[in-house]
Image (tube, rainbow, N blue to C red; front, side, top):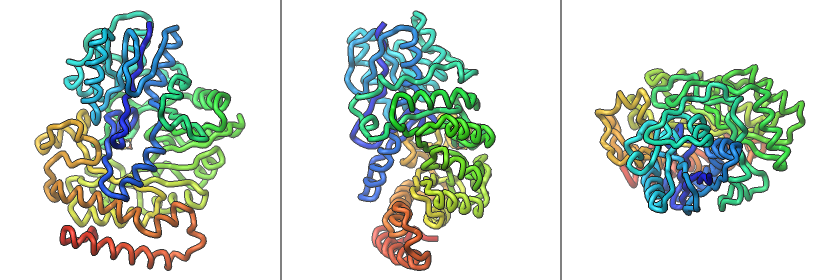
Amino acid sequence: MRVILADLKTSECLIVKDTVAGGYGSRFVPFSKVTSIYCYFKQRRLDLPSIQMGYLAAILLGHGHDVAVTHDAIPAGDVALVLSSLVDYRRETEWADEARQRGIRVGFVGLACSKMPELFRDHADFLIMGEPEAAASRLACGERLTGQTTSPPVADLDSLPFPRWELLRGTGRTWGQTQRRRFPVLASRGCTEFCTYCPHRILAGYRSRSVRNVADELEQLCDRYPRPHIVFRDPLFTHDRDRCLSLCDEILSRGLGLSFDCETRLDGLDDDLLVVLRRAGMRAVSFGVETVAPETLRRVGRRPIPEPHQRAVIDACHRLDIMTVGYYVFGFLQDDWSTISATIEYSIALGTTFAQFKVLTPYPGTPMWKQFAPLVFERDWQQFNGYTPTFRHPNVTPEDLRFLLGAAYARFYARPGWLVNYWNLREFLSNALLHRMDRKVLQWHAEKEISVVSRAAEC
Ligand code: SF4
């Protein structure tokens, strides 16, 4: 059997799927010079081959099938598995319709088709509901999948074959043409936390792979590709401190010449752990700050992290030459203009290397979705993309939210302090001088904001 794995891409704007927003994906259309530059950096970081497709390729090849990967065209084949998303579902279903007209049986995989089957079922011969590997194994064994096929979560992640990347190479995307190849790796799946807005924890519970199994995969990558860069896509990479230290030990004792990024909570990091992570190859870490207001976080089930700890960890990262990426969300129900402005100021004060600002999105299947359903006004599911207001907010209009989003990117990136952080030049400039330079530029931003909406993004 010849199986097509379709991870559809577009160059129109920045669309990322696979493990972003749990699999619903995000879509960012740059709306200013600053956001265009931001998109360029984000594209470089997140333009990875799909890890779900990597696992499916391994399962199908392991059973002796012929596999073709596509990002656009429809190659010849018997069955196609299409990676579903919310942010690009129209293109995915159009592709499926055309493939079916050519006689190819089409199935969808991923979080979007699992939680929103109504968007996909008229365009497919089958939908794989849940983590796709179990159903893909049945397909590989010759079963004819039909309708909505339940696929239970993989209980033992060590039982999976390692993703096969050779098929996802040379497909026209830039990821394979950089000097150091970048590969996504999942050392665990799901999350142990209970943030009510998060789609990462709604498909299956938390499970982790053994340290040995993860290290074996990393070693295989190092054997096949010179000095690979690994992007751990686990939502909480340092959740188990001892396990994390053991993985670093394995990387070092096996002499693996790799570097890596990961994502975690800041309370899962401390000075000693950071030193070991850096020695093992960590070059960047991402984490959610979300908002400056601890009470707002508690209301959405997120445990706040004390501000001194946040600052201490970020400073330690920069001393160790580890890049930091802070995530922020605007539009919690308690937010208003001044709390969002305060969050923007806080993001600047924390001084991370990068910041990502998004608009709160009530994703289907999350506890927040149930709470927000009566407020949702957006009827186009592709607008549930992380950057578009989708519900009636009690204190902030959609226009204000969009404006504050733009102001956040402008204020964070278009100032001298960001360039100094990015080029790691802090030791050459005094904090007082940098602060003065930033204040001048932020004053300029305020004047521009007042000229547009008669109000500055300041609290
Ligand atoms: S910490 Fe919260 S937001 Fe982050 S992945 Fe876990 S549940 Fe989601």
